[in-house]
Image (cartoon, rainbow, N blue to C red; front, side):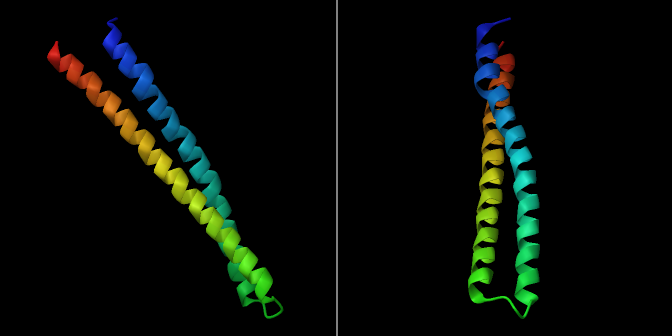
Amino acid sequence: MKTRPVILLFTLVVPGFLVVLVSLYFFAVDYEALIKAETYVEKIANDKRTNEGNLQFAYHRALAHRINVFADATWGLLGGVITAVGIHGLVMLKQKD
């Protein structure tokens, strides 16, 4: 096996794909937490006995989960781009030969 494809494979394709997998896992975990937090905010917003402090705290926790979901999706896209660059490099090397 030639060294250029191996270098592309182990420096771009494999790490990029691992970033996609890990990001998708944490996206699923954080998205479920976001759904629970939003449901809790809706529940306490409809409760007449809830004070403003509890509602604000729950709302900001939901916002934190929303930011985590966004960050996980962004890392997943970045890993996909890294993987695509590596695959493109492998294809271009094969076309050169």
